[in-house]
Image (cartoon, rainbow, N blue to C red; front, side):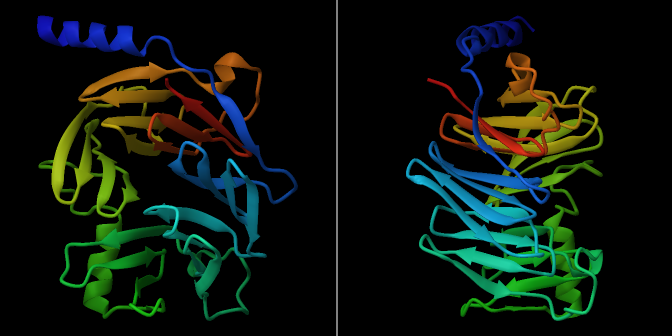
Length: 286
């Protein structure tokens, strides 16, 4: 107990001088709701929402609009390998130079926004002989072929991939019902309904402690430099080193900003990015 207390005190003293949050992006217009963010570097960020995808770098802002096919999830394995999925079963791929539409749903007559034509998860499957990207929605599971096209797998494989997308069965003993956040190729962070949390890296499971009881729901999780950063549904933020959870400051702690619903979080190096409904914030430690 004394060692644990000492370790907590040491971390607290090191982490005490927190940097301030800075606003790095603000969406405007009636279709400006932000759905997801993915940080590639200190000055390289992808933002997804109803309009499509926006990339923010030190050189400026690049916006790729997708019409009525809003983007709800991003996956990145570097600045030259980014995937975006969303409404209308749309799948986009960014190769470092431009976006390519690799797939779109076959039902243009259905009302846009129908849950039947939605992809909400995209991840990399490496535990099979042929590693591949997988996109998942309420009704569809698609696999990426070597030529960049996407196709539905056989029914038995479809069920297996759908369960894999949410980490079911969860790889920690006795773990049930928790959310699963894909962070990169075969990297994830997940939680159990008994409050235990874990990181997952190519099959290696590492405990990251129990989340506070007040954090009943999780809206986002990310990892960088051996630390995890968690956004809870109640608007509170946490930094996790080892299995020790410490509260983080929030953007609204330093300003009366009303955008306090933090729905996505991402990190790169010593920088943490946080997305509200229409605003993205950044905080970089020294």
